[in-house]
Image 1 (cartoon, rainbow, N blue to C red):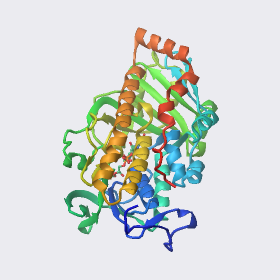
Image 2 (image 1 turned 45 degrees about the vertical axis):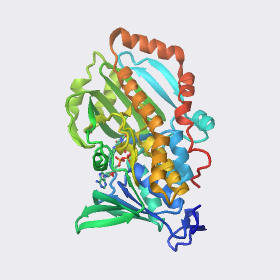
Image 3 (image 1 turned 30 degrees about the vertical axis):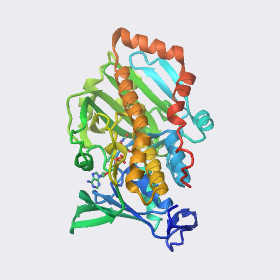
Image 4 (image 1 turned 90 degrees about the vertical axis):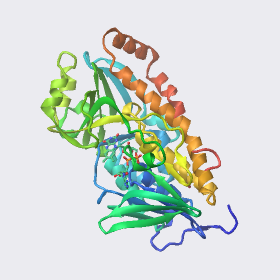
Amino acid sequence: MPRGRRNAPCTAPRCKPSCGAKVLTSSPSVIIAGAGIGGLTAALALARNGFRVVVLEQTERLEETGAGIQLSPNATRVLNALGLGADLERHGVVPAGLRVLAATSGREILRMPLGERAAQRYGAPYWLIHRGDLQAALAAAAARMLHITVKLGMHADDFATHANGVTVSARGRAGVVDERGTAFIAADGLWSATRARIGYGEPPRFAGRTAWRALVPAKDVAPQWREPLIRLWLGRDAHLVHYPVKGGNLINVVAIMEDSWNAPGWSEPAARADLMRRFSPRHWTPQALSLIGAPEAWLKWALYDRRPLLSWSQGPIALLGDAAHPMLPYLAQGAAMAIEDAAVAAQCLARMPDDPTAALRAYSAMRRARAWKVQRLAARNGARYHLTGVRAVLRNAMMRALGGAWLLRHYDWLYDWRPPPALSLS
Ligand SMILES: Cc1cc2nc3c(=O)[nH]c(=O)nc-3n(C[C@H](O)[C@H](O)[C@H](O)COP(=O)(O)OP(=O)(O)OC[C@H]3O[C@@H](n4cnc5c(N)ncnc54)[C@H](O)[C@@H]3O)c2cc1C
C-alpha cells in the first residue's frame, strides 16, 4: 500500500453491511466506458478495492437486451466473490450437462457432465442465464455502492492523458462532460472506439456467419426441451444451441449458420420463414426443426472477431472484454473472459494505485495469452461444428470415443481459472 493511503472499511451511508468495500483514504478514481458485463464487473471489483468509479454508458437505459449467456465456473467464481451469487442463483439454471447431437440422425454424440460434477471439480457453479438478468444484477450491486456512479446516456467520445491521469469526454443530452480519473478502462464492446484511438484502427472481421436467437416460453415446447441441459446440434453448415434460462421459464434458442449478412448490432429483427428455409429436413431431424419452428419472433446478429492485439493498454488507458478480444461464441466464453479481465484489471490497479500505467500494463500482460488461446479455440470449434460429409462422420466418431468426461477434463485449464494468487476480490 503506498504511503498516505490506508484501507479503511466503507462507512458510506448508502452502503449495505455486505458491501465489503475498502476505501482508500484518498481514493483514486477510475473511469469506465460501457456498463455491459465487463464494465460493471470491473466497477464492482474496483470499488471493493477502494476506488471511486464513474461508469459512462451510451444507452439511456439498461434494458433487458440479449438472450442466453453461459457462465462457466471461471466466471461464476469471480461473480460469487463479488457477492452476486444469491441474486444470480435466483435467475440462473444449472445445466446437468452438455449434450452434443447429430442434426441429421438426432443421435447423441457425447454428453459432458456439468451440474454437481462441475461445481465439485471447480469449486464454482456453471450457470445458464439471460444476459439482461446478469446485467441487472451487476447494475443493482453497483447502485448499492456509494463509490460507483453509473451515468447513462453518456457516449465516451474522446480522452486526453496528462501528468496526473486521464480526462475522458463524454457526450450526453446536456452536451459534453469531462470526467477526470487516474485511469480509464474502455469496456465499450465489439465496436470499441477507444481501441481505434489507441492504435488498433482495423475493424472487427466478419466471420461469414450469423446467429439467430429467440426466447420461447417453456410451456410452449415439448417437455424434453425444458430439461436443464445445453443441447448442441451439429449440422451441415449450421448448428443449433438451446437451453433454459429465467429459472427454466424460457428456452433460449440460437441457430448459427453460414451467411453473408453482416450489419453491426445485436438485435436485427429476422423472419422465421427465412430461417426455416435454411434448415432443410434433409439435414435436420423433425425434433430439431420443431424447436426452430416454435418461436415466431427471431433476432439476429452477425458474428465478428478480431486479430489479437499486441497490447491492451496505453499509458493509464486499457481495453477490457470484447473491446480487447472480440471472440466467436463457439466456446461460450465472451462474457466469462470479460469477467476475468475485470477481476485482474481491478486487482492490478489495487496493487499499484499510484502507477496506473504499470498496473494496466501488468493487466494486459497477464491476460493476453489466455484470451488469445480462447479466441483461437473458439474459432477452431466453429470450423469443426460445421463440417460435412466424411469429415463430420470422423469428427463424431472421435468425439464419441473421447467421451464427455474426457471433454470436461480437457477444459480444466479454462474452467479452473482463478484470479492470480495474492490478488483477492473479497
Ligand atoms: C445489446 C447487447 C446484446 C447482447 N446479446 C448477447 C446474447 O444474446 N448472447 C451473447 O452471448 N452475447 C450477447 N452480447 C455480447 C456479450 O454481452 C458480450 O460479448 C460479453 O458479455 C462481453 O462483454 P463486454 O462488457 O466486453 O461488452 P458488452 O456487454 O457488449 O458491453 C459493452 C457496453 O458498452 C457500451 N458502449 C459502447 N460504446 C460506448 C461508448 N463509446 N461510450 C459508452 N458506452 C459505450 C454498450 O452500450 C454496452 O453497454 C450482447 C451485447 C450487447 C451490447
